[in-house]
Image (cartoon, rainbow, N blue to C red; front, side, top):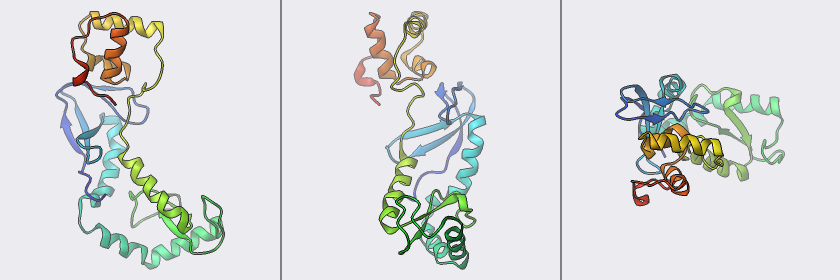
Length: 212
């Protein structure tokens, strides 16, 4: 959990779809982009254009401890500090002495980090007040959210006759399935299957295409 590689600036050797939230930009070959490699799923990457990279890079500076072995000690020091206990009292005064997820009142309520970007300088919006029953699942959900692969922007959406015509035209113009996947916001396997359905010859075997 604490060994995610630090994002790095790279020069694109081919086109990539920016994976910033809601961004439709295609990172062209030769452009600078921010590459965030993930340990899980293995060999996966998140790539961001320059505009989307700024908040990611800022967050990475705060997340640098994920690659440091001293994180457990720093975390333990933080949650046992006077400042952390004061923040807990402040949250209870603001939100009441109850779990923010299930509504359980009293008991041993703990502060839960929604993220670790601001660890050491947490603000009320960075934490939740949770009971022990809700705390562990919330921790697991936070980890899953960080590791979840980003799907193409049009993943799971249907094809229209207009999109079919655009796809056919681009394919006949010589675009590769990888280029089309970026342009149409789909996986390569989705592009290949759609081309086959349109009766177009597919030059790349399905076994070599991603199946996500």
